[in-house]
Amino acid sequence: MRKMSKWTKVGLVIGIVAFMLGCTIGTSMRLPQTHFSYPNSNVKPIGPTSGSASEVCGILFFIWGDTDGSTVDDAIANALQKSGGDLIINVKMNSGELIIPYIVAICKTTVSGTAATMKVGEQQLR
Image (cartoon, rainbow, N blue to C red; front, side, top):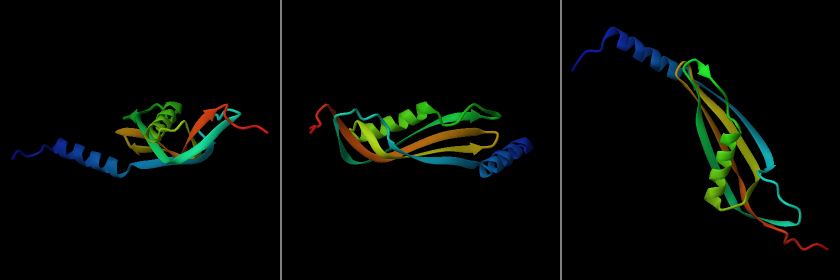
């Protein structure tokens, strides 16, 4: 077996220390629904659903962003695809970043709530 050079060992130690010093930052919010429900429409709950999406938002010394609208839209689309619903009601959205110093930053969004269907224009008005 070949011996590791001094610089390989130093690089390995720095990598392990950087990984262990990594941190996460997160936020959470609640929303009434993910999409607009049209007037005179029937919204019927289907059941619980959840979805997530993630992206790399920084490499080495360059952090170019945080969880943005496209990541949130992807998480919502994943949750709706699983459930077959038209919108999600009673939404809980969690966004977080895992930062490993000098290596990478990963942004992740998770959406959960109750999937619902919407039939437009079929509400009985009195």
